[in-house]
Image (cartoon, rainbow, N blue to C red; front, side, top):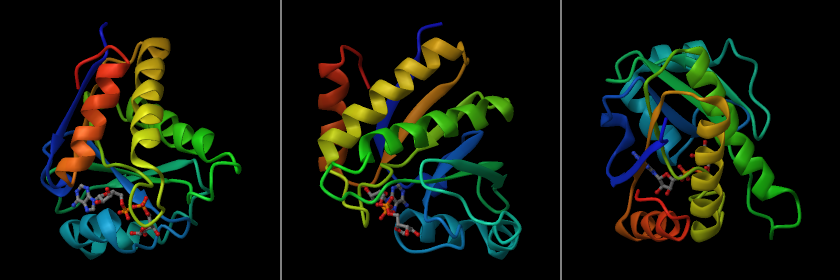
Length: 174
Ligand code: APR
């Protein structure tokens, strides 16, 4: 199965996919950025379910229902805060994608949408995040045989351009 990846500019809370991925923090109790947008769109039931999860370590992922979102599931993952690159940040970001795809497989998702995890408040360099995420998703889809269409929904034109450029460098359209 050829991995199917794509990237678009938009608001991930509007995506009609089987699961959207949230760039959360370890408390899983909401925040700003895409985390705040997802909680606002999903409604208070999302926070109520998140409270039952006991948080989530950086690099790992936990799933909830989507409630008032078009997507029936939300996969909450916690990206690394960029600290200069010497604290395992690249591997932790790759782990976010691997763990999210693992959960998507368990949920029998056929479509999933990612934001640019760690590229906002957590200050991860955009090009490096794009390269890491695309390479990790392609490798995980190939190794797992998951029949999953992966879309990045990027909030700004410059981030979309970075994703497209890095995908091209990796020899795949995005
Ligand atoms: N749809 C898609 N992407 C979005 C949206 C949205 N509605 N809102 C923001 N983004 C983008 C940002 O522009 C950025 O490119 O998501 C990317 C990730 O940025 P953040 O949301 O700041 O996430 P992150 O850098 O991983 O930091 C996580 O921020 O909101 C808090 O609780 C969160 O503490 C956690 C931290």
